[in-house]
Image (cartoon, rainbow, N blue to C red; front, side, top):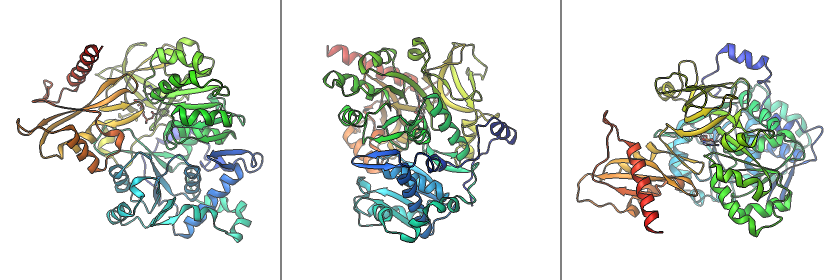
Length: 556
Ligand code: OOB
């Protein structure tokens, strides 16, 4: 059994193969390809633990074999939630080798998100960490297992009173198998189709339930290879992974996979704060990292007291949310490294500014697509193309942009047009030389400094409160985060007052990830409506922005 997905039309698949984008190699090749030449090279650093390419390859094979013995097989799915630890990549490659298709949840995800993913993919295996408060006990393990009868195997990183210990699996003595480890990968790979689904990426989403993004070996490997080339990665690259490891930015743009492909070294950071990152950069001579804009602000604040800490850093990639021009201009002079803007999405399309671009392109645009075969259309509300320089909705298709979300026929109708173009929900403009600038958004989402919050998901939870009759979540401006979220609520009776703390308590009790909790809650008598009877979110955004502005002026 293989995982279903919306395939590319045959003539395009043929074109992508002919052009060498799709090579029919499996993603596990990223680590296996170093077996001959680079096997002793340092691949990964996690705290005091260091892994050569050979170790990374062997550890993942070992785990794959254990999982196979447990009964997992090609076409099964898995739910994985790990922090930024070496095991994330070991597990990732192990599952790729076995043909088990994982959803890699973010570590900030909570009960609600994990339950939603499990419900969608019916995993047979869950690999989690006892560092997460959800897995400090086995309560949720039991609940999730009950809700998903398919879920038969739990593997856990860290001390726990449930499941099989990941450390035990990785350190067990498998004499007979270790001897023949080199022959095993080919057996494990047997029958895995490179044009099939390798794993699921997570969508930032704008709907009530988070959507899953099926990525195939062929499409993802191409984006990794091409990104590594554009970013000029080499065996000398030392990349600090400070953003969540499963995110498309830090995984493949070019991210850890790009670095592994090129034979460089990945250093893991638990978080992107200067406190955590600066000493790692100095200690491991990090040459490149990727950040979201709020972290850049923190780095710029911290750098005057940290002289010499960032000397080795050559490239800072910034993406995930809009980077203001003034911040962009400060990066080279103050951090002493080159800025590369990255505008990407887990659904596929990734744009980079190139190292030989002019300052104008570097500061005013978010780059141009990876591939000559990334097709970009920018259209107005009637679907007509807009002229260069004019803003419009971004539509795209290409060799590594999905054709449909997992198991979502209804939603796919809206998210993709008749010709298979994905509507990203971004308002962009394009220069005459093909560079994109993100100028706005027409999806119902809040981009909280790179972390995406789907308005509808929170609104549904707010409406679950019996006292709430209407709810709308909108973005409000924030100096550091770019945007934060504000929930407007109307109560069923005018004399009911709902304290923000009660609402937050309710949302926490629903098991929602902390970053999705509204930053501000406004109780109002009524919500503004558009002429067609929808909640006028534009008016609400304006209202809260003006309110914040007034408050800031008053406090001066
Ligand atoms: C990245 O991926 P996602 O899936 O978390 O979010 C995609 C959305 C885009 O549609 C856009 O709305 C926004 O995030 N975005 C940006 C941006 N990069 C992403 N908005 C403004 N400026 C940028 N530079 O966020 C992602 C995936 C791969 C590489 C980089 C980012």
